[in-house]
Length: 506
Image 1 (cartoon, rainbow, N blue to C red):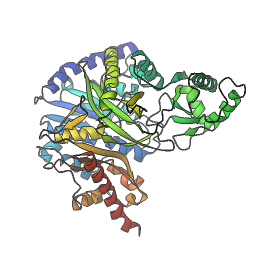
Image 2: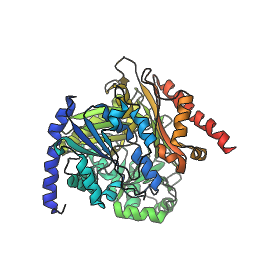
Image 3: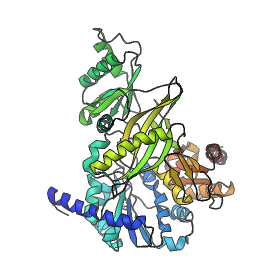
Image 4: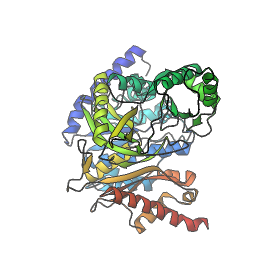
């Protein structure tokens, strides 16, 4: 499709307008036919392996549960073909649906390209494959594209397929950068750490830290974040302890030394490469919030095509990595002691983004610390204008149980009145797990009674299973009837995998 920039924008807006009547139909839960095209393309510097790309693309296979709608067709595109047994695993989870009926409405095209490049890029290189996908869409008026993140590649893909995209228009990209987030937090009166945005050089960084230390002399650490960093991979920590008082003539030289000694979250990063990226992309520097009682919760929201802001869930994030900034997993729901607090702040941001015209799912990350008065203080950290690590476990729970989350209480309740909780991770990994195939995993799960059961509505749901053989890695969501239940089930599942693979290593 060779349209001018202006014509492409006009055509994209025309397609996006189709989401309004489509969404009204979806909200009425009728049996109108619809086609959902899922392209879980990821654009991340930190992913440099085709196996990791494929695993993350398969992370959203929970969307196969949408096939419980009897007239829904799902086109799920991945870089490489998904194992049939993995597809069967998800279809067998469908409540109230005959798997063979759902299988006829599922289509799995693939470019068969295992390179570590975004899936959308691979598709745009293959016009025949795009035409094949188009041919699977019976009625473009009743179809939409579901991407992971939204760049101009996904926008172009929507144009070539002739269907709207359920996600934020890439023209809103700046709102989700670290600098853009800070500006929104300031404008919407959302509490956030002391800092400065639009940092593009070493000089900017030194000047900003100097000014911050004047405002808060006892500050001991600051964090630098690249505007487009994901899951903490663009973050670096600078230690300020022992520096002379602000205004001392020695401080600039000493600050320069501290910059060169900063600790990077992404392994293999050098000072020179990081500063080069900072110059290219800009970033922020802000106080690192710390405390004896410190947590990292998030709020998941969506803005519907009708402009409605919906507060979907809260989670406590499980973080790791060199400085504790890398996302590993989450616990749901977040502690009710502060879940309503962060939800209230997130709602301010949601209303602002809705006013700007953003649609789709997104999340807000916070840190909370308990003050000397015993009260939790929330600080907004960033806006993720995309689906994230908390999206797939929450939607898995929602699709499997038909439960609802109450943002006022921070509690999720199934239709039978039972509260539900989960622990989820994308990083259940061990070199020994490389001896397992997905079929081995299914056998282990069944033998140890870990499989999610519809009757009791508890158990374990796995994802990213294709990464077992090459990476020794999988993901799982452990659903229980209490936080303790879910945690114990998660730990048991990991212990079982460890035990089952221990004999293989002997």
